[in-house]
Length: 272
Length: 253
Image (cartoon, rainbow over all chains, first blue to last red; front, side, top):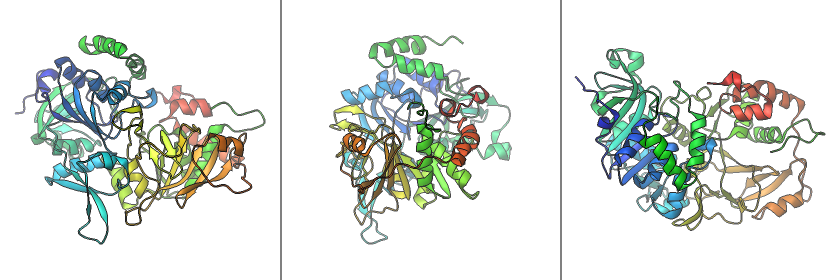
């Protein structure tokens, strides 16, 4: 039987320095407890792919010096304003930015899902995003006359890191409606999941649950992390902690304030 | 924006939502991205006025969100022509309809960095009606030429394109967009053509007589305040409370 990890720290062991790590957008269950554990462990030189956007998670990893390359369509704290550490790192050049557009990231991961080297995508031609992405190519469609189309190389992450409501003792992970988590897991070599709780029985036994279940053969490790997306919300389960996000936006506005934030909320374990 | 002057019975936000709702018209599927309470209001008005077949997808909402195949489904839908209307904004917008959501100055060493392009570099090409919306109408935002083209307003003839900008709505006026340029279509009550010219960095056309933006009718205001506002509270509780006086308490999570 599948062995649950003893701790979040054990579960994230596959995420090493230089890892090509894919993480989900802000409304799909952001594994923040695991992210804080990565910062505490001092992971370095991540190539972070945020599918297709990110907020606190990318900002925290960037501010803590964990990211060498960032590939995403946007980073923002939403109603709490710009993502301050992301903004500072791009302006200073501390992080190499690979600007994208949302469907391009979805498509590049879908290419890996299918095991094909690239995926075509409409749009993009005439955008400066295409100009600054020398890894994206324009070809003439072989099925039409004078029909240029962009090809995106497959993104094959080393690890997909996700947080979901539950998993079972067989290594199956219930993702519900957040289907991009399946795309991430299908595309990545390994998937690391934190979950709110462990489901008794096999998730695949119930057809209603099975439809939203990622089968265990994709999954490398699972750890229980209650309220594991805090201070982000887990849709349908609990809301974001707005007060905390506002506090983050305030503190992270300066590098000194950000260092205080890390000291208070990341290096020191949060009092329950 | 401030409260409406006393002689008016509507707020600026209500006027803008009404303008946008008229631009939307009667369509099948309207998608609204993040942090867009006024476009969301407009989309919900359009749905109420539609003949019962209009879908509104508010991407931040749980209730007003029908997608079950992950975040990519919106883009796959749009690629097939299943999304009729979308909204974009920009840190900079220029007279050719180009939008910049990335940065100002040199891309490698920017002066200002914005969050990023989101889905613009795709949706601008494939959604038939894209409505540009920017409440800060200034020479800082409406520029002669954007520093970075997240998404171009128009494309070469051989580039696949079935959509693009139809209008730009600002806090001061409405521009229509056609044939690669903007035309001043109406100036909002309390604003003037001179003020629009003064605060716009790009060239645009205008008729000799520029009409004042039509005020929302009593029926529209009633619809907005009584039917739309309660629906909006789930996604934009602060906005709904501030503009429509909806109680935030009853919509707490």
